[in-house]
Length: 55
Image (cartoon, rainbow, N blue to C red; front, top):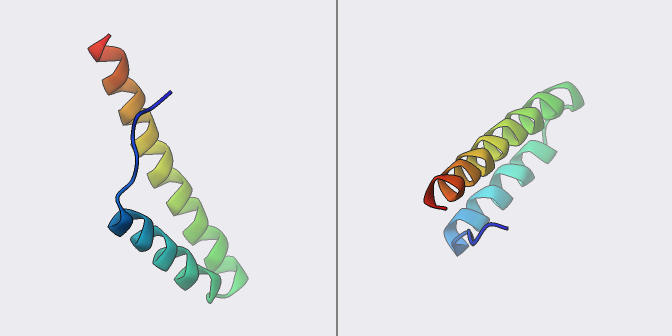
């Protein structure tokens, strides 16, 4: 399990981004959420890799 806890500013930034995406037309919304997914997946995978390298 990861010890990563996002800062308030990171949480606020993600929330703002999601709210902006929600106001977009459906096709654009789907692409924007896919981009958010890819970015979050990348962050999680880097964290997992760092955690494994520290063990």
